[in-house]
Image (cartoon, rainbow, N blue to C red; front, side, top):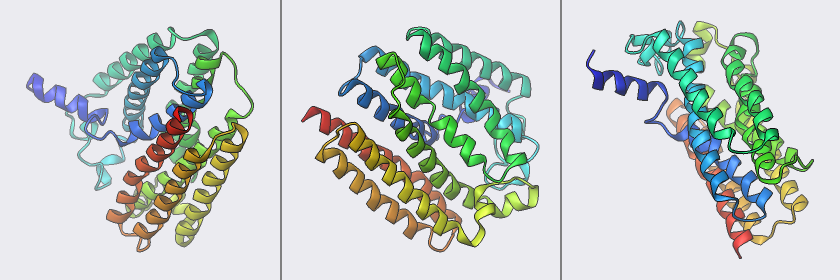
Length: 286
């Protein structure tokens, strides 16, 4: 295989062409950094967490594909992944995974001891998530825990401690992750039923839209609680109000449970994270 083709296959393996996962991981980390710093965080931490988010999301994609490589060929959306087609070998994927973890760990070493300790939990959560699809219909809970772990790490890095109120943000993001990843799981529901992969979309069945709506409301309620606990102002709540409108739009998109509409709703969640961050940033700036 030509070297350029191998390089392109490795980029495909880490979803470099699909930044949605990185963005959904990055936005709550930025929320936490801004709140922990009560404004613009230390620039070195902003760089560390931005790069670390990219590295850990890439590593997570590899773990997911390694775990699912025997099933992905049976799912229409994933049958072209590099480990399925043979464009990347299992050994190459494992070596790249280790390289990404090492790079992320080097970044964490530039923070403090508490953040370094928390980083081990981040690796554990990212590693066990793919296996949960074999044993539980709620792997989205583990994904939410993994996607939210940047929040306590950000507080630890910026403040050197873990204030109790940060767990409000953590819980909010976990619930939000469950909501948007259920939309994502709705895309593959028929294929997952055939190959035996479990998901919240299968568990919720015909109540999927209702439960997603409840999760969205809980998410927004916890974010209101976050605003009250940290003394945030009008711009933050305007951001939340805009996020609520986006959540209503997502309900519209998934109303027929059409895979294309569900996938569009999933992708649009990056704007939920973005408007909340913009509101936060404006609130501290103005």
